Amino acid sequence: MTSRKASEVEKGHNKQHRLLRDALAVFFRDWFAYFFLVLAVNSLIINLILPICNYVMRFILYVNDIPFLSYTNILLILIYQPFAAIEIIFLVIVLFFGTFLHFSFLIQGVMYIKVYHRLDWINIIKITGKDLGKISVFNFLIYAFYFVLILPISGVFFKSPFISKVKLPNFLLDFILSNTILSTLLVAIYIICLYFSLRMLMVLPLTFFEKQKISVIIKKSWLLTQKNLWQLIWRSVLLVILIALLAVGLLYILYFIQIYIDSIHHNRIALLTAILSVLLFQFMIIFFNTLNFVTFFNMLTSYTKHEFKQPAMPSTTLKKRSLLQIIFTIFFLVFIVKGVYDSYVYMTSTAANNIVTISHRGVTNRNGVQNTIPALEKTVKKEKPDYVEIDVRETKDNQFVVLHDENLALLARIYKAPHDLTLDELKQTTIRENGYTAKINSFDDYLAAAEKTHQRLLIEIKTTKRDSKDMVNNFATKYGPRLRKNKSLVQSFDYKVVTQLRKNHDDLFSSYILPFSLSFPNTVSDAYSLEETTLTKKNVSTAHKQGKIVFAWTVNEVEDMNRMVILGVDGIITDNLEDLNKIAGKYATKEGYAERFFIYANDLLSVLDTGNSETPYTVSIIYK
Image (cartoon, rainbow, N blue to C red):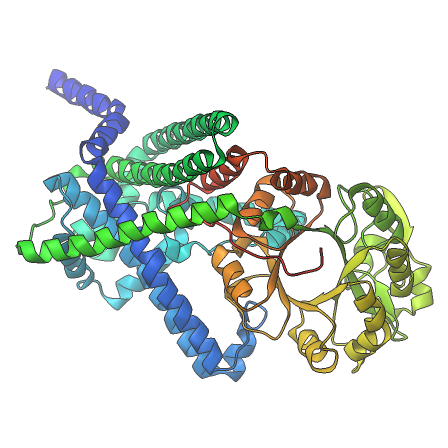
């Protein structure tokens, strides 16, 4: 008995050691079926389902006369437009169900291919529909919580276009991390969610293959992960590292090949190889994602092999199978054609040569105190930005001061708001930042300094409940002629500012700032200033079709700057002008297609995209 137990234990250890190898072997046995499954489904979602959902959302906003949808106006919609709120909530539920259906369909597809070694769309649809039909509303709510819970790790192995915009905006993340209490709380919440998500990993797979109550399935997942969690984690980490190394290796191989071709061949041949390289790399990223998902799922199910039943193979006619195969093949071909077109547009576009550089609050690389004349002068002298972005607030005596914060506590250690002090009192106030000190400047003084160096401004009008009734009109009347002459622009978070400028000062260029856009806005502004985290190619192309331009803020990392260029934005607001100027210079020098390929491929690599790539096409229409 003892020797038998020892033999069983040894077999178990050998199985554990072979876990990743066996899962990879399962994938490569039917790799094309898995690849085509993921590619075709994602192509269907990206090119058909999501555009329909976007259209429905925009139609809801249009019918209910809602110019934009963001966290800044959600509460107002809930209170004053309940029917619109119900319609929006219903659409959000549909999108969530789409994520659930996407994940479910892929799981059923992977299991079907694993058992029958072929891709049969009709049978996979039948099996998925049959299992979904048995899920109660209560269980669906449980799964809603489950999806929220596993978000910390779901993006590593499962990427769905339905939830691609579920992100924490960078500006909000920076704010949280700058606060010790909030950052500690965020880390604690993340660790807790990460732990529970790991323990609940097997809930959804078990749901489809074990017809039991959700409470029983949760207990099973908890027990199974208790025994095998760490082995699964380190093998999953090894899998991710392996795939990352393969992807990076492929990137550099294609990059060096393109450098060689750029140096010896005619421009047309180099362009053709660059387009093919982009398309190949897109396919390989999808292949790597498929490899990641299928291998991880096979490792996951190997721990519970006795729990799973083989999916049934319902009978179906050859005619039905052929029809569905044709439909998914069409979407596959659409993906290829779209990829070739987007790659061609990106490689030949000249819009990136004219990217507008904008200094955030008049500083770059911490060279002074934000929104002050000394910082302005140093930034303009060294980096020569196209625009300098600043913030303007009203004072106690209805004058205007250049200041971002609503309270002086952070910069001046004074717990007062600008509305508590007169302009003269504010001008005597010393503020400190980045190791520098300076006085707060009036807008008159700052504008004069900008005019002296012929520097154009992007002026954000900050608003509070304490502002005078005619604040916006007073500002535009007093400074409008000088701003137009200097070709300066105005923007605001407050949509009322934009509408007032459009109504009374139509010739003053205005941009509406959106920190997080849940749907593309339809406003009277001339431009949009969009937070870079949730900015997409669709946002940019839609804005351009409306004759509007797009600024991205606040973009400080080189990889994010390159991504914004790929998306086709017209201008980038940054605290790092030195790197932005270098990037703009790379596009302007036209050194060949290799550099553009590297930037595009590196952006795909940074997120291991699922094929929802973003390539630019744009015409810059602002002052340059």
